[in-house]
Image (cartoon, rainbow, N blue to C red; front, top):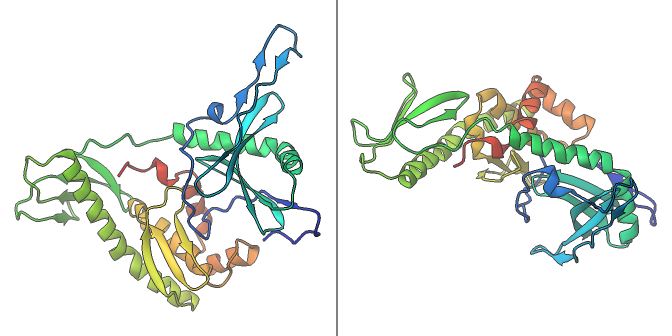
Length: 305
């Protein structure tokens, strides 16, 4: 957690949390490349200093009350979302929507944009990382027809539209999911049937893992539910409510166990401090490898469902 600053000085908090404690819906459309996040200036001649600063777009108010603003970074224009709060530090978060700055209400825009300028290398690097994730998309959109393939618990399973029994059935040995639909079923029917099954499986698989690791840690959660968040694998509130992204069902059990252990550890430490990671390690010592996997395979890189 950032250290409290003096009443008239806002500290900077640029730490990016792997699994944020609370889901926060994206309010801006995902931006596809760093070029769309940082626009170059217009050059007017061959002189190295012959650049014209573009007129920055007027600030606009977003649905959540934050403001979309733009700032010059050297020879680039950077859009960012500014949120005012009662916090005492300036915080930076970068995800698929771009840069979000959360600032104390009393900090001036000049000071905020000086802080952005001071961290511009970090900002550009993080924006580039997000672009790299999109470019590494390994799984194309699935054609929802008979024979479609998708990941389930770390293995590839095949979809069969019809089934001998006329009902949905998963053959674990053959790794075939028979949907029990008529052969005339369209792509949307197939997709909905598969997604419904995956979400049911997520509840069935996740619940006992939560119970197992909660017992190991000696904590009690109050409620468990599934999440469809686009940039969060899980969340935990201080009153013990845990949500897990149902798309984790695509991953091997070791990844699911890591996220379960991560969220339960927040019932001991509601932060990402050294003590928090010690708590995670106490029930899931292999967390580093799993964390690395998730950092390089965010939810938007999974099959489109």
